[in-house]
Image 1 (cartoon, rainbow, N blue to C red):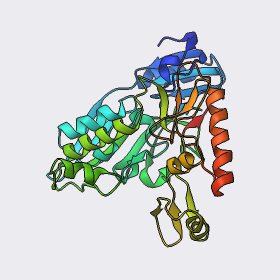
Image 2: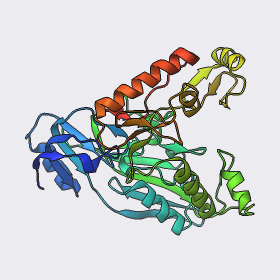
Image 3: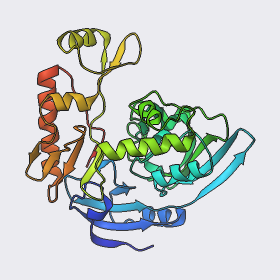
Image 4: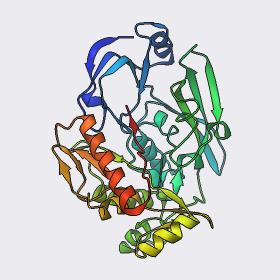
Length: 337
């Protein structure tokens, strides 16, 4: 195990923000992770995965542990399903492609989501009608306090919309080391009703899509809408889509009858945050090197040398204007550090 000092984190966050870790160690084994936690080199520990769901607004005065645990193995399988255990440092999209290549269904709608497997449960990643919890069985963790190992079941994770126990009650207390998934081997439950999936499939005259077809279409859609972090710094969707109650919705819909929405129940409606931000006039806007993407208003970008604080200031301006114009509070999906 190697510990570095004053390590630049610019290459470890997809916003490409320049920030420094007081101490830094890349973790390749559970043993190294335990040793790092026992090192006492700094009283504070900061866990870093794929760096895709955070905005660094300061240098990190802590021991930063970059979780680089690798490996995928089959735990069990029958003719209908397979149970996979995946280490936390595996890239999420590469894991999805592994599943597609082996005809394991359930994660195809989550194609091209940035980040690593170990951080996916923290915010219950989701897209196009599918969430991580739909295929999640359990995850193994290590206690930061005493290095004891604990398994969390799906129920114990308390998954919600872009939320879990690791984002609330257990935040900063456990490190996810691996995740177990149950996936289908046949009769896949394909979901094509969300977004423009069905329309894109019809363009290619595909009426009974395979999971590979769905993955390829979603990759195409995401690439057309979302900027590549390797080309321009970003963290994907910066804000959550807000949920409002039926009384709030009636008032909103009366004032904005053409607004898109998703009916969750008789009492709850979800409004696309990207639409709210665009209508508030921020799409394509730029303040210095901090900006809103020209094609997708839900994505904030770093045009080169923006600081995390500058991007946060822009986000707060957007929140204020959306609240002022629509009476709706939009909350960040990314973790502000």
